[in-house]
Image 1 (tube, rainbow, N blue to C red):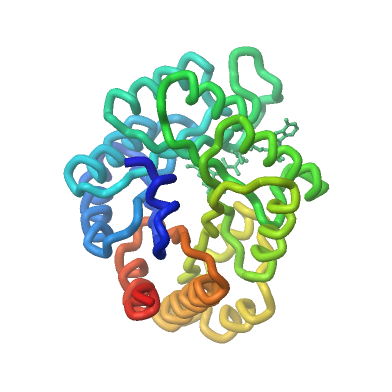
Image 2 (spheres, rainbow, N blue to C red; image 1 turned 135 degrees about the horizontal axis):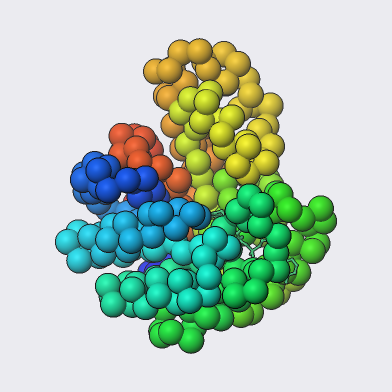
Length: 289
Ligand code: FAD
């Protein structure tokens, strides 16, 4: 089944995300993580893709396990900046052979020392979207950035390029993490005005430690609101308290989104089934309404 068909159903959908192991040794542990998450009945589970290509085969294997053994929808991420067009084509064919119908098409971060454009590499995610379309009837998701992508100085440019990307064949969008829902509502307003009408899944990252917050900030350039900084200030040095507060903060963001009519939400669960379970338990009655 295609994710876009699930998102069109008139009910609440909460999806999760896992990342593959860096080496084959960690594979069984990730499978155990995925199995634990499956019990929480997510709308789908997405599997990230190592930009260096090192974990590409594990992305397909884990996405297949989700689909074939757990009978859940899976979404395989795919990046293109670190690979040649031929390598990317082979991965798409491999996903097709695994029967994977849903791909999140990403450029990936530019590898160090590489200056684009590079002959024989896709330059932007929109080119990857067009390539995937040539290989079959996939449901294609893509990334978007409520606070703007770090490489782009002007948000207007970002939205213009996002429109081009969506028009190249994107079925739905997932946002970069954000910690102030007003930023998301404002972004939604601006992209709808620009004519981008596909479903947008807000991406919620539960921050459960001070070090995770630092990493998230470096990765996304997101702005942490004062309310979050106060939590970090007060509880950051106590791992158990920070974890509880981080789960509560993410739950609160999700409740606000649901209360404002958002139906599809993606949680960056990372490989933490306990965090996913705690949030789903907090929402147990809310998602029935
Ligand atoms: P693009 O859409 O190509 O955009 C990249 C930049 O180019 C933007 O600044 C955009 O405005 C600009 N741009 C686009 N088109 C044009 C144009 N025609 N002319 C000029 N400028 C243009 N990374 C991984 O390595 N693995 C993952 O699994 C992964 N999963 C992710 C999931 C989500 C939901 C998100 C939000 C990000 C994820 N990333 C992942 C990170 C992502 O790869 C990076 O943010 C990357 O820098 C941009 O990828 P993109 O697909 O958004 O690129």
